[in-house]
Length: 311
Image 1 (cartoon, rainbow, N blue to C red):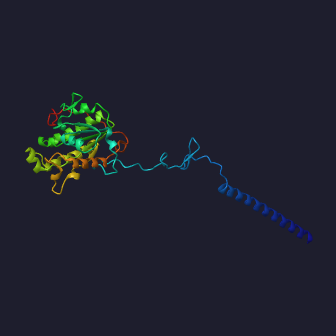
Image 2 (cartoon, rainbow, N blue to C red):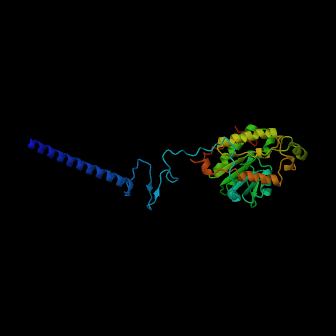
Image 3 (cartoon, rainbow, N blue to C red):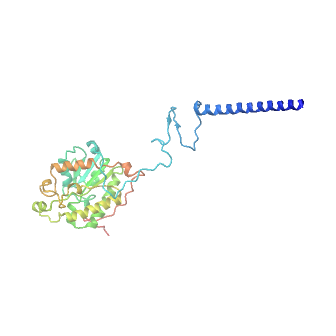
């Protein structure tokens, strides 16, 4: 009986030793886990398949998802909507127009004189028409005669503002007007491939004043609004910026207010200043328009003086 009790005590001591050893091992494992979680600051090799901090060449850390290292799958900015007029934004400084060319007729010439812009290239001519930009030598620069496109190619510009269409109302050729405007955009893009091209919608006229001043009954707002619709279509087709100047000047009667003009067509000083303020708050960056590069200009088609395609 005593021999049996001795064996039982021995077995109990051995079990206590085993349990104690197991407890020590578990305590060590727990201590290692706690150390790694809270005190171990040894840098780990990043897993290239997982998002996380990246180490720069100078030892600095750059978090994934930052501007320099966008997180995979981050959505791109939506493409510019060429079917809509340029959205209003914060006004730019006047120096924005230092590398701008202003293409137009006598209306644009008045803008350059009276708006206070004080910069930009004045490429205007009284009676200038979209139908003859590549043919009529309407501009004189340093004593030399140039077509508009020849003059535009003499320098490099960051922006080209086009304002043409009043004189063309008298041709009564809407199809030719649209075709000629699209062709002009292609030619301008060909000589100024890095420029933002702005098409300025036509400012309304005051028909009563225009008749009294010039006797021209073709200067009417019904046809002018058709032209503005065509300009918007051309801007969308050719992917250039449309500026809705019409809505900035039209009154409740669909006309240019009498106080804005003396002859119903050309603007006084204060409206020209408003014109400039509109341009300053409606600008678009080249990269915003063409993140993948601008469209390729289409080959030019020979046309007649009224914009009709030559057979």
